[in-house]
Length: 427
Image (cartoon, rainbow, N blue to C red):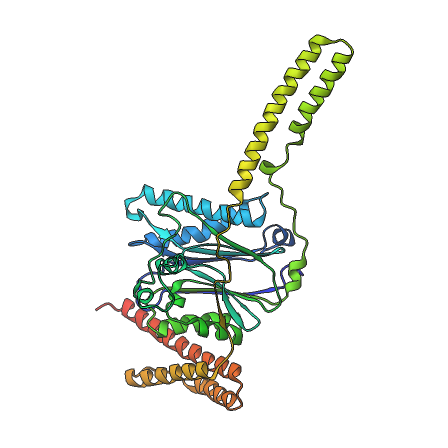
């Protein structure tokens, strides 16, 4: 039975190798809290990573990112969640960099990493690279992360303008920041964003955003439950070429009241006010004053010396504390989320697009003589047509998406059988 602290989220995750790649260099982690105490301390954690590098290097880098960020984040016992998540990403980067330096085959391997923690204080994001985090809220799809890519950085610096020919000529897959290549990495932190009933968060690799438009992602997230939405988005990416691995993690807030669980107070002993050091010189100077009043000159001199030493220690301690605070609270960039916003409204145009996808699948199946049971698919298409006739575009999108999912499921099964048959009976 669900308890108040964990009743509020629905999670779906899917990673697919795509149509052109031999191996999957994406990785993800989904770690919903397994107790009220852990939710109050660390919340629910989700990570998507997209690896880069020859041979198995990218695959290893993304796997390490997903595993190490999760491990280090949950291991932090005192730091508040935002600091713990940033440190976890930095420590994961150091591990990936170290592994890349140790083996020539993994040299300079790297990976993106987008992480969100859903905590009682709100949603916190740590981000490096061009994988993305979106939020669907009140009919709008918002991109909450800034792409660390050449085209985005040049546009942000004013060197190119949106929709210009120069911008369109810049390769979109050149990233400017990742985990692994360098010993240290700058992590973008966003949030905390307050949670609201119905909020839906999408973490995804660029295998999705390279093939499916933001104007399509929003309505599909809005019209489908998380599991169906994840499948439909991946299927669409593959139907449009599947040039890259595609990973989606979808988290829907079904009950925001779960975020009202009292947050645990996070106390970092390194940043605590050194009260003992403060009171020690005060005590020594007061003692010296009293000793002087009563004529105890020798002990008075000792007390003054001890007080000066204690005051010097206190001064150095406060300097260290100030430096630590500055390091832990880096200056925020001028930019802040959301970076882009799109309508997630269901439209007749998207209904037509999805309908044409189903038609194209049928034509391809007939031409290539695929064996497909169209009974369930045709029923979904008929439901979509009826919904469209009454201008219920949301229902029409949902039924067309289900038709695509059903068709692709059959094709994947046939492809797997064919591959197993070939593998079992080599020529």
